[in-house]
Image (tube, rainbow, N blue to C red):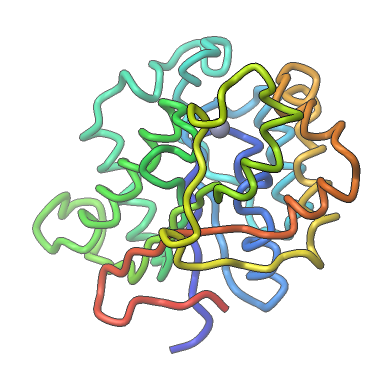
Length: 251
Ligand SMILES: [Zn+2]
């Protein structure tokens, strides 16, 4: 088979750059196809515009597909829509199944089961991506949503323990370390060196201007020493789950 096709499923604009921007940029630079489904924030909002800029910086060939749900903590993200976590899960699985069947990705990338650090929207996006990848392969479920398509592997972005050890003293000094997340190396399947793409990834994060102005964690990250930022942005860690024997490797 040729170059694998990627589909990224994220909850919030900025996660695509922060957690998976290196993998995405490397994939498209190598001639691979990649698309992004964004679960929250409606088209026309400021965060949507910022996301479109970030996706351009990463080199994605098409604009993001917006599911248009509201962010769990930001009702203004989609004033006329329900919260992602409160809407019908079946409707969401059907909608994402339709995108998967149309785009025919070999690999779906999303968060790990904890949503990396426990954000309810991230956990929900993980569950949605898993359920839709399974559903898309069924020849009988949602049969009006296009012909069945088998995703070959799921990749779950995670934060390794060592990365949280480096971040915790500056970003979360008031939280005891054992209450912060972090995946041990033994539970990480794929480590992607994206150190040569750290600057582009950072430019993708910086495109989310309104979020940097609002979020203490993102602003805190951006004020870390440049050398530390580059080290943290230069590695991405994933858990891999194969849905067909042999699965699918990254480029
Ligand atoms: Zn997020």
